[in-house]
Image (cartoon, rainbow, N blue to C red; front, side, top):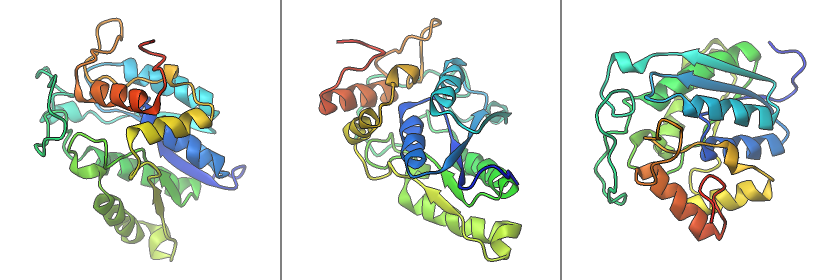
Amino acid sequence: MHSKSTRPAVILLSGGLDSYTAAAMVRAQGFDLFALTVRYGQRHSVELEAARRVARALDVARHVELDVDLSAFGGSSLTSNDPVPKDRVIESTEIPSTYVPARNTVFLSLALGWAEVLGARDLVVGVNVLDYSGYPDCRPAFIAAFEDLASVATAAGVGGARFQIHAPLIQMSKAQIIRTGLSLGLDYGLTHSCYDPSPTGAPCRRCDSCVLRAAGFADAGAIDPLIGS
């Protein structure tokens, strides 16, 4: 257990604007943040660099980067050489190829293990059900089910502890997320969202994540520092 932290929380930190905002919101509630970033075999390292920048900006108590290579399984354009969908109708109910099978289940399981060691009962994830690309593991039903799992899958849970999965963005639009982050003083120039960046790390502006980000900044009446005016 980490003796110095009175309210530890484990945050899944990807380097994107959602996890950055979720972490800042929880930090504002008085939690001490322990950030977990997973190198899961994603096709580019730029988001890992963003996660490091964001972790420093958040002044986390500790930042762990963990290797769990999901590319060994394949099944996603984010963990293979398959093309990333571009110019897609995001309102489509079809689950896109950028879905990484069971990713959030795997990640939250890792976060849960660390939380139990820390004596933490709070996990934080930046999932969102409104402006998402059709991923099943970004829904409230998934969060509720994982909380129930945590209560029976851990020694702490068997002992009566109750874990809480904080998903403060889950019912927010991308514009609401951005406005909230800006009100907390966040620098979104530190983040990365693109699924298929150039070799220099520049966003493609055409994948689902880029399109959602651009629409969010436009709706929020703000300028994306990664793109400019």
